[in-house]
Length: 317
Image (cartoon, rainbow, N blue to C red; front, side, top):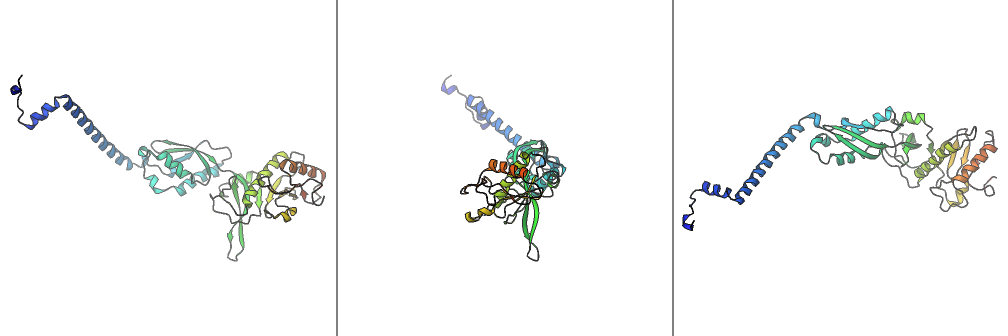
């Protein structure tokens, strides 16, 4: 066909129809149909999302959180405390976001739950739609009880309460952990000068009496496991009032243990901080000396049991 035989397209629809008949036109047509389909789908999803926002069953709030695979020491009061604490710090904006459409929900929930005063580590957050959140976490357990100063009364006198503290020095709620404290022999630590912080806060102090008290509580717990001689008393208390002592004052003792029969044990420092302490032995030597002294002395002998130094250097030997 010669150039003059090509039909002339005079109208716009004819030109569009001719373009669509070409390979390029077919590709443009497919692209246009795909874009329209995507637009329609987006509108449908947007409307569905808006509808879900209005359905209460699809919203996550604090009551939808449950804790699973809890350790055996968690009693009913602790279970209740776990859930009530979530309610206290749960923000309103999370409850407005449906789990079905929040791609960052797992991360957001982990960040939220990290503020929980009873949780040491979030191990897993399992969101089961529409609004079920199952949490696996390690639970903080008391390492010791502290006779802690929490403020002053109207007369200016210091007010003390007994609070449980975990191994990382986080203060725990005494009411929530009450039954556990009553059922177990949790060592009492006294003598800390620093003011106790609020529940859920880490307790640290300039003198490091809290850290030394926790280390001494670990010593006490280990002694209670290893002192298996018949009739041996338990360690029930730790006094860190004399810690830290200047070198010239260390002969008077820094950490004192109280036994269940009322006798006192001059333990010295724990192995957490023996740097610069002359001739004071470590745990094994002190434990063996304590066993020897308990066996050699009757309970009527109220002298302090000093296990810090070898017999040749121990004061009063």
